[in-house]
Image (cartoon, rainbow, N blue to C red):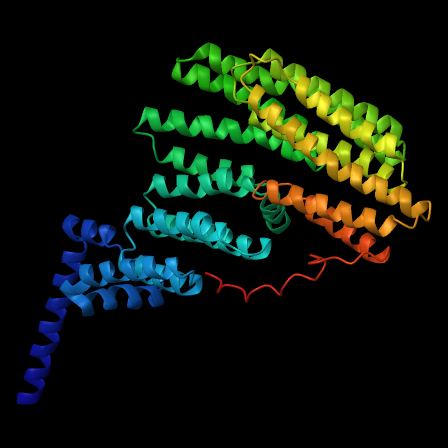
Length: 456
């Protein structure tokens, strides 16, 4: 009987506790506490690592974080990049709700460490890791528009610094870097509704991404996509002018740029169709026509930063040299190869007048091709000697290799992605002709380092 009474009292007490807890859980104060709990949406593994780890070190957490930052600095001086990544991961777990921590780590990986990479593959690994880190920070801090901006900015600014990075992004995702950037900027803008200045900034980025996407699509010969994006960019520029009511003339002029790009895009499409037919003469003619139309665009909109247009123009110049000058080199046509390169030099010099915003840029481009002319001249002379079975062919190929090496050293750090392949071709021809090279770069590149661990 005593046991039954105790059981009933215990059951009643437990029921009262449950009812009380349910009432507490339903209270506004409890709901707000749960909503603000930073750990509630984390997977169990993250919860245990971050919450329990933080609880265990307690008041020593600031000291631990300071020590890890100092250790990271030391390892960076020693170029111990894998160890740096491990320490940065620990720091992010100790301070997962700090925007500044995620921003710094992502920037350090994508810029500072990637800049010191020995190979393009290794550089891509670190840039990719920086982007993943920024995305992870945005996931951990869903209310932060700054971290979403950081992801967009890495796609918008870091990836385009090397053409191979742009190609890798597109190959993996079927979206170019500017499409990724636009998507993240749009998400950031949607969370910055309380700040007109921030929304204006994000709209500026979004429009620039739309402009760049036009010419990225054209470079992949997706001309319908390019023309559609041109219409979208023009409409978006007009919407910015209407929405904010400031700098209206500036945004209206920006909106005219994609519309006025259409004739040049049509010339590019005709160039591509001619190449597909094998009509290389017509393709070269349309390429010159497209470049001229883009140049007219630059002159008309002097004062606007049209980097997207200029990037595409430079790609057309490179395509002309690769498609016109190099084949003539391979056939030993000295005059024809030099004439093709002279055309690139001359049009670069005459692209814009001296008072134009972009004049220094195009003078630098012209000088690059002037400096490359010594490589081309040495190469075509050596090829002509080989075809003529001249006894001094090996010596001429050695001179060509030296010219390419000298040019590469002078322009180290610039994104001339075809130069290494051409240099290797010249070395192979020199060796085939019997030349003895001091330090050929023809040896296969070292194997890539093991891949970084993938994030969830």
